[in-house]
Length: 182
Image (cartoon, rainbow, N blue to C red; front, side, top):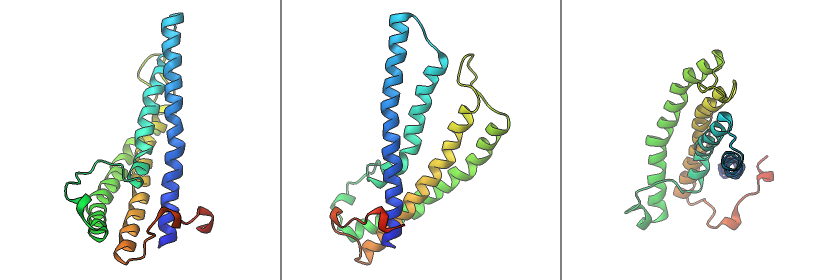
């Protein structure tokens, strides 16, 4: 269980790190847009749309990474004062009752939306906007986000069970390297 948990968390960590680089690309593209507009009186709708789409990708694909890092929004008035075993119970129940059903619902309900976008070869509504297949790719990130949240949710469930069993690593130095998982 510990190896599977570590593998799933390493996957979330890897994808989050890769997605973080997209924020740098977003800043650079925004800078180019501003320079082109104000210095050269040039602009392209597709370039402006690409910033919005990168922003959406960062938020959607970064959700599992945020959950893994325990940086998500939590009302922790009582949680932070609880011992580790009680926190594990809260995490286990929260993941099973709220996260997993929401992620499955998101995946199931977005499937037709994404499928239709691919079938009709959807492109931007704006003249000069991003062409096909950018819109279907962006929409495909919705079920991908749900899938990544489910994987991280499984890691959280395993972590809570291991904590309740008293078998969780007590320090980051006990983290298993990804090579030992494969």
